[in-house]
Amino acid sequence: MNSLLQTLSCLDDYDPNSMTVDRARNIILDLVTPPPGHERGFVRLGLNRVLAEDVIAPVNVPAHDNSAMDGYAVRHADLAPSGETRLNIAGTAYAGRTYDGVLKPGDAVRIMTGACVPPGLDSIVIQEVVHLEGGEDKTVIIPPGQRVGQNLRRAGEDLQAGQPALNKGKLLRPAEIGLLASLGQVEVTLHRRIRVAVFSTGDELGSLGKPLQPGQVYDSNSYTLWGMLERLGCEVMDMGMVKDDPAALEEALLAAAASSDVVITSGGVSVGEADFIRALMARLGKVAFWKIAMKPGRPMAFGKIRNTWLFGLPGNPVAVMVAFYQFVRPALLKMMGTQPASLPSFLVPSLTPLKKVPGRTEFQRGRLIQDNGRWCVQATGAQGSGILSSMVEANCFIVLEHERGNIAAGEMVNVQAMEGLV
Ligand code: AMP
Ligand code: MG
Image 1 (cartoon, rainbow, N blue to C red):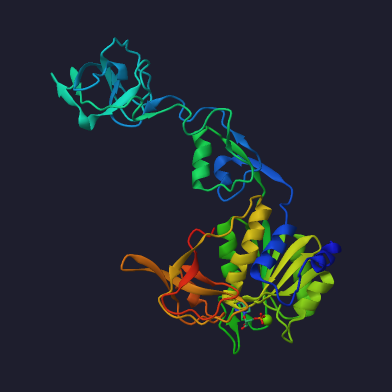
Image 2 (cartoon, rainbow, N blue to C red; image 1 turned 60 degrees about the vertical axis):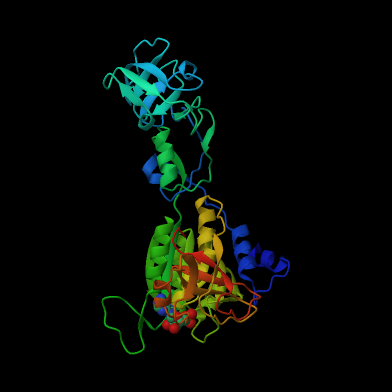
C-alpha cells in the first residue's frame, strides 16, 4: 500500500489539483478489486448481488416443445396447399400433462398455451382463426396460409442444456433470479456483500430527535448515504457523527477501517481551517486529496486507511450524492464482483437556458418532462450544492460536459436518468 501515492503520482497527467471526472473514476476503478470470500445460498439471497460462478443450464428451457397459444395442433403436411382443411379433433392437450392419445393422419388436437405438442404434430393454429363443425370436439376447419412450425416454443429456445445460462460477474436483478429459478437452480454462489462504514464529520451537526442548537444542521448525509448503499445491496454500518476533533476522528477512522471493506466519510475534505481530517487521513493511511473539475463535489479524498478503502466525500448534501454516483457507486460495483457499466445517458433539449462555466463537468439537477409528446429537461430551480430539495425534485442529472459553456434554451444536453441507478 505504500505504493498507492507513488503509483498515482506516476500516472500520466496526474494532477491532484485538477482531475477530470472520468480520470478520477478510471483511477479508482483501476485500483479497487473485489475482496475474497464467497457465499452459497438460496437463489433469493442473490438479489442485488453478484454471481461468483458460471451457471451452466442443467436442462433445456423450455424442457419440451410447447404451444405458445391456445388453438389447434396440426401436422402441417395434412393442410391443403390452398383453401380450407377439415381435420378431426382427436382430443385436448393441457399444460402440465403429456398427451397420450394415438394420432392418425388428418387428426388435430385442441391445445392450451404451454401444453406439450403431441408427437407428430408440428404447428399450432390459433383458435381465433378456425371454425368448428359438429360441435366443440368434432371437426376443425383450418383456413389457408398457415406456416410450418408456427406458434411453437421449441425445447431449449430460451436456454440450452449444457450452455452457460449466466456468467460469473453477473449482477442479479429480478430477471436473473427468475432465470435461475427457471433452471431449477436452488442455490447460487455469490460474492460476499461489501461492508461499508459511514460517518459524518462536523462540529455543526445535530442528531435527529434532538432540537437544533444555534448554528447546527441536522446530519442528513449519513441518511442519504445509507439509502444509496442499501439500494446498492451493501451492508451499511452507520457510525454516526464525529466532531472536528483530531482524536475523535482518528478513533472513528480506525474503528471504521477495522470492521469494513470501505469507509465513506462526509465533510472535512476541503481546505477549511477545521478540516483536520485531511492531515489525519494522510497520517493514518495513504490518502490522496483531489480537486476534481466538477460541480458539485469538487474536493474528494480517496485512498486507504490501513487495508480499507476510503472515500472522503465533501460535506455539502448534493455534492455527497453526486460524488457517490460518479465515483463510489462504480467502485462498489467492481468490489461487489461485477464490471460497472457506464450509466446510460441520452440527449434531450433543455427547456430553459442553463449557466455553465467551461473547464469543469457540472451535474445539474433536472426533471425530464414531456412537452407535446417529446421528452425534454428542465432544471429544478436553485442549484446550490447544499440544496437537497433540488435532488428531491429531480428525476435526472443534466450532465454538462467539461468544455461546455452556457446553454441556450432548446440546446441538446445529456441527461442521466436517476431511476434505475441501482
Ligand atoms: P465541509 O465539507 O465539512 O466544509 O461542509 C460543507 C457544508 O456541508 C457545510 O455547510 C456543512 O454544514 C454541510 N454538511 C457537512 N456535513 C453535513 C451532514 N452530515 N449533513 C448535512 N450537512 C452537512
Ligand atoms: Mg466540516
